[in-house]
Image (cartoon, rainbow, N blue to C red; front, side):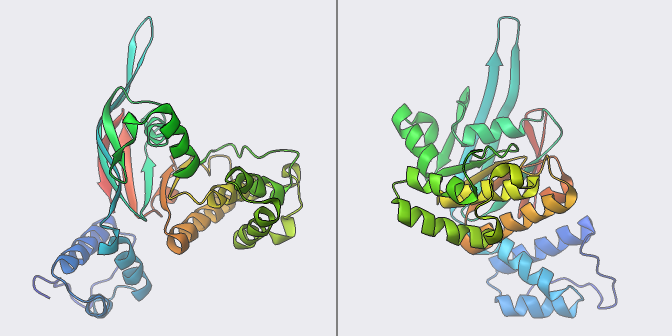
Length: 293
């Protein structure tokens, strides 16, 4: 491999060092562009002291199979007008998200994270700019097409779990399937498959008030999975969870991303969780200030 790294085998490798990680990711991308086989990349970097699991995980995140652009955001601006003043919440946002990517959007409160997510999910309309999903400018959709888009293409997960209190876990997930046209029997059968994936079979007949916050959020994620949409939008899903349950939710997102190929956009102010995504988009004052892998 031309232009390959020259680090000494004796150099101490620290995968948590941002400088070392950025250098490593740069070499991985260069190797991809040069057509270097995956096996040679693994061999080369493992000889330099990089952990093999980390190398393989990085290859998956940066591999060319994610070339297809699922979402393209062009010069997106959102202004809220009132009688007294105008508030610009998003300023000329440009961002591309690839099919099957797991992207975290982070930044301080008021940075514009949720506003951007709401526009992607067509829960709000931009003041100007375009959002392309699978090549279609969704901002130009008729109201009927917007409803279909929200029903079929995106699943939304909120920080509040929004479960139906008088439905048990099985019924909460089956309800989502019935909306899509599943028969009662098939909805229950598929719901049990999802509950099994969630690791909640013993809680299948529990009502929300008997579940912990972490368990309720897993059920909410199960409903999103039942919808079988290509894009999952998650707005601060760990905000009201402790560290242990928050990490369990993150592991579930990673499993869904890897096993089902869902495109996931996660809004979070918690940096430790954001860093577990494939890419991290940092926002401040309505602008994107950095994008890092």
